[in-house]
Picture 1 (cartoon, rainbow, N blue to C red):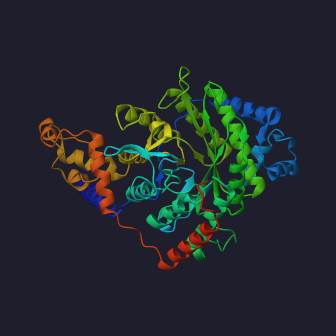
Picture 2 (spheres, helix red, strand yellow):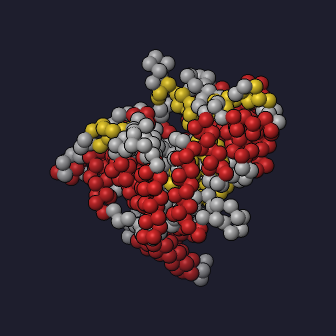
Picture 3 (tube, rainbow, N blue to C red):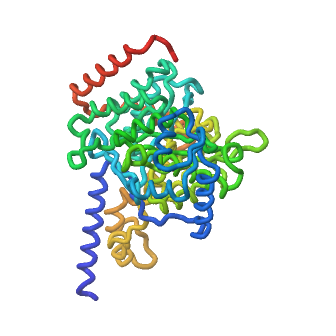
Length: 519
């Protein structure tokens, strides 16, 4: 033992120093890779019951595909029973279309290849909140969002090491015309960040504009030389109009993106009790049926186009009808849907940092934590609404964004699991210190202390006296200081001037074709 012990200690110490150096050189992982098992709340028999009920919904009740004659003809040609706008799919049809064609995992390409994300498998991608018409900060309170706010949030997402994605409609810039604002939003993602982004889905023409702009941005990288198809450079949110309905806006956008090999997140958006049954199992069966119908439709349009199985389910107050967040029932739905997505064999989107709170207070923190922890444990692959969500999604909060981003760092660390390398086992430290002493000065601690524990940039861990002397600030006040500091330090990623000029020329030409109205 005495002859081998020094060598073991030296090897462990050098490994610790090497690990510390490596971590210090890594500024940001392009996405999180989970090394912990997925938490299950229902057994195989229970999942089979829900899958059977989803097949009954598809075969006997059906799904409405509204105001889209082409979509109905596509289903008719595939062998579905189409009566008016109601489509009934033979048992197993949707599952087979998805499993035979849709990729289990795919790459979304960023303009900076180092920011490419892998969606599916053991990977998790965090993206900001989406779709809020209002913004909130401590200085100005609640107000309508502007394009300046939109750009600010793109910059904050770009600067956050714990957000892997730039997101989509981070907030609605209501100071711009509805029929033109998508150009400015998509351009902001392209100009002010080099991370992956989401496209416009509010009209098929706007989806096509997104594709055309992405083609300009990626240039020679747009086409994959191996497949001859466009690379997947944009991911897009296609919501079902629950219960059991898809409208022409979402169908039109889905067709554009699928035909260009861009990814579609097919998501039933459900307030349980109003848009689905009040029970977990009933909501899960309806969600599965709606999502499978949407994903199967995408495969009929373009076999092999990437899809993501989405689930967004919240509970509601049966007294007021208001949506509620952070409650246990939606967490159970999330766990069940994640398991069903794994059985179906496609990536899964859900979760986030959701709250009904109006300001970044204790309610916001507790409700968001009660959504984010199940998101992490369930194995969600694409997490929309991961940062900034307030007021049930009506507001995007500056301080909330920073607080949530901090929590995402903690969740990413937890997903990394337990380090069982020689350095992780730390036997050298235990041998060196022995009984009755402390570990503060030992070699292993000195080699690892900088990265041993997650360090929050906004939590206060100082003494009461120091906190008192520094103004008794709460976390929202510290977050207010931080987002302002981040924006002051922002430096844009380099963008080829020729590409920028081509994008601006395309936008100017397309905008000139619209009437000067705000509709």
